[in-house]
Every structure is written in structure tokens, then in C-alpha cells.
Length: 193
Image (cartoon, rainbow, N blue to C red; front, top):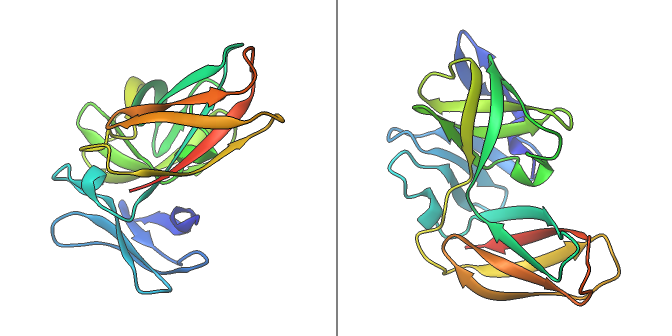
């Protein structure tokens, strides 16, 4: 659900202007949490400044990775990415941030936001939650580790005809296994907490 494509900056404040398909509302509540409500009445917390977003049940996280001629791929929920900041646009090395990261938290040097859209293979737009964006080169943290391993793997989608399985779950991520001992497949893993 691309609910964040419908945000824009007005007078230096971000406002929701239209909800995407299946979304009936998006707002920042009085405690600073970014929340949205779907057309079934479920309310989701996308970002919580107290750090408890990762413990919010009902959230979905997508992780993307590519096997490096091996049968094991370690995926982490939180990772570091080098970015260059200019207003609400960030640039990065191609593939460092993907469509799977849209809607995930991103932070650097006192700034916290959400990746609101992937504009190209090397640029994305961020939605500010707290702090000053700053400018220039930054080391950003994309995502945030879960509080525990109380989540489930909903799907593993690969671009090659291989069988993919997963190992034990950890708060920081999981291992994906391929039936091909020299796999170079790209997979997208969907997790639900």
C-alpha cells in the first residue's frame, strides 16, 4: 500500500493530501506517532518516537537481498546506507534503497523520518518526523530492529526457479536458504509482526 505517495510539504510542514488505495486516513497523533487507518478499521503505527514502533503488532516489513553465489543469504531488519541529502530528497548507490524500503523508518544525526517514495534507482523522497534533515553526505540507518523475534515470514519471492526456505528468526533479522548452492537470485521477504 503506497499511502506515503500522497504526502506533500506545505509551509515547511508535511500534510497528508490524499490516502492511497485501502487507506482512509494518515496522521501524526499528539505523541508524535505517524499512524494510518485502513478501510477495514485497523490502525497502524508506522513510526513511534518512543522507539516502540518495532514492537507494534500488525506491522509489515519487506526485506530485499541478493544471494552472492551461495546458498545462504542473511537479511537484517536494520542496516546502514550512505546517502547524500538535499531538501527532502536523498541520493544513494543504485540498489542501496529499494521499493521494499518504502514506508520504512530512516534516520541520521538527529533526523528521523520515513522513506515515502522511491523516485529512481538512486533517489528517494523522505517524510520528516523529527529533527533537521541537514545536507550533504550522511550515514543513514534504514529500518529498526524488532524488540524480539515474535514475527512470522509471510512470503519469500525469488526471481529464479529455486526453492527458498528460512532459518530461525532473530530480532535483528533472519537467514534465507536456497536449493541452489551457487544462487544469485534476488528475493523479497515479507514479515508480519
